[in-house]
Image 1 (cartoon, helix red, strand yellow):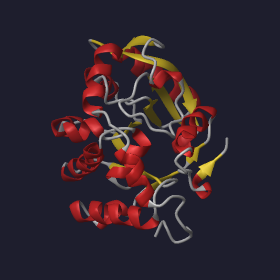
Image 2 (cartoon, one colour):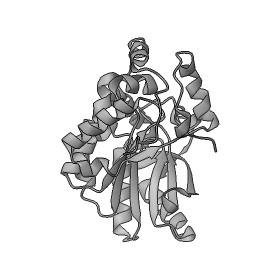
Image 3 (cartoon, helix red, strand yellow):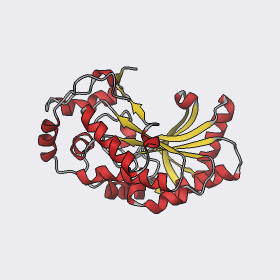
Length: 273
């Protein structure tokens, strides 16, 4: 089990509940729709760079502007919140850039990262259509927080129609209270990524999910994993990815806001680049 080597918690869940009560919370569905009207123009979407990455054994990446969560541990810099940055790219052009990087470096994986790729749905679908039409023989990994897939389950069925796609759902917290404290979003939004996982499983789409283990007790995470297994299968939680906190300057700056409440990450899950 993933928790076998873990010691005590870094903050009591009772304290987290107290902090959560002080946060008003925002609706990440509404925020995502508002962002989409700014970062998408037809089949164009805002990016701030294209690059090669060592993750997944090497992958071509398009970094998108804008996200509908405000995670305290987020590594993305200005482009997460400042929608004035970046440049619009047509879906076909974005696909060509990703293919070019992958071919030049011998990568078998292409992906979108930094912001939330499911914001700008028309662009994403057109990008997937173009990639499939090229028979480019690569795997597309959709990295998502799962909020919009959970809110609009018909979108899960839509991406299930594409070959060569794998979805990675990033779970930010182990409970609604932790979710509210770490993201600032309303507690009820916590269940949307879980619903996305259920939909991916029911549609037999290739996927896995990650857990952000730096915050929350062992019992809290184990309870969530049991709930996901109950809704899907124990096979699903057997493939869980433990995501470390990469302490970039942007992450460290955002985490300072939590320190005044005595909320700090478990150092065993913190990586300093």
